[in-house]
Image (cartoon, rainbow, N blue to C red; front, side):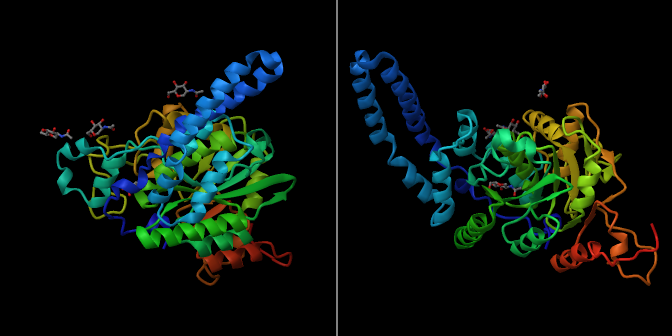
Length: 425
Ligand SMILES: *[C@@H]1O[C@H](CO)[C@@H](O)[C@H](O)[C@H]1NC(C)=O
Ligand SMILES: *[C@@H]1O[C@H](CO)[C@@H](O)[C@H](O)[C@H]1NC(C)=O
Ligand SMILES: *[C@@H]1O[C@H](CO)[C@@H](O)[C@H](O)[C@H]1NC(C)=O
Ligand SMILES: *[C@@H]1O[C@H](CO)[C@@H](O)[C@H](O)[C@H]1NC(C)=O
């Protein structure tokens, strides 16, 4: 089952799980930092004359530590009951030596409680909407969720990130273990191609409640430990939360990988010819606007209740969408990613993630463009005699949507077969 195919997206809202009041421990760590930052220079600069101040501040620090510290582990454990691995990682990352600037850490590890917007239920016709749309409206304003699994060094730090030529950002639900495993060995392998450094992250939320959620979190924590390629936030990984996932990724990128030259943003069920992508992108400048994919324009919200893409007037009144690229996969420059990130701060979330990207681009006065090699609607194979999976059709593409894991595995091998002979061009 693929993300863009998930049909059963109705799920009861779990109010408490997303909003952990870890924020309460924030004052303690900030004060501790302030104290310690000021202590050291004072001691060295003015030697002994400020000993009194030192003792006073020291006592204050200890008092604050005693006051606030016990709250941290307790609250984390109660909110992510039993998921010990992510909690450990979260704590380690918080106190790790190579932290990003304080402002960024703050938005990563301390979040404001995001409560259900009860007024949303006052909108006309709310009670007639399907459950997942009600949930969407209730939580639409929430753009910050706790990061459970982080990758601070994925791009060699914020400054080193300029060396990353292509960052592969793959939306993957926790249960899609097999897909991730195949991608690691095929088109998403971290490597250098023609001197260009390729890096990979899977972005994920949480699945299920209670036991199932803990098991899935444990799976991701294991993969994170083994492969170092999972980013996970504590929100429900559903089809209508894909936009949220995208926005959270861009927040992460701003702090951890702001200078990556290009990104492939896509689903975990695509065949991406990343070698061809590098060759295509090497003709472009990552510091300028680039957003290419399968262009969709002159369309608007689907108003049929039965559709997976149903967007009622309560969510969007306007009958048209800006031009956008199909969300199965698209390529963009690091520059454009940061422009979208900035625009997203002032644009209300829209449940369809690829449409939301189009909205952000439009706000910034930019346009997405089409590339023949991106086939998110599938590939038209004219002859019925050659199979749908004839590698000759795939060796020149950039991206094709909807492959099963084993098909990806075979295709990646076949397009790299030196003995492959293709008659057509
Ligand atoms: C919803 O509307 C009712 C009546 O219009 C009003 O009394 C109530 O305060 C509203 N609720 C919220 C949460 O805005
Ligand atoms: C809550 O929903 C109401 C009705 O849709 C909306 O007017 C209001 O801006 C929302 N509040 C927040 C914090 O988003
Ligand atoms: C999105 O995630 C939040 C946090 O887990 C959840 O409360 C909300 O119901 C989800 N929304 C949808 C549409 O699934
Ligand atoms: C960020 O977005 C705001 C609002 O859309 C816009 O006014 C501003 O110029 C943008 N800044 C950058 C650096 O793009």
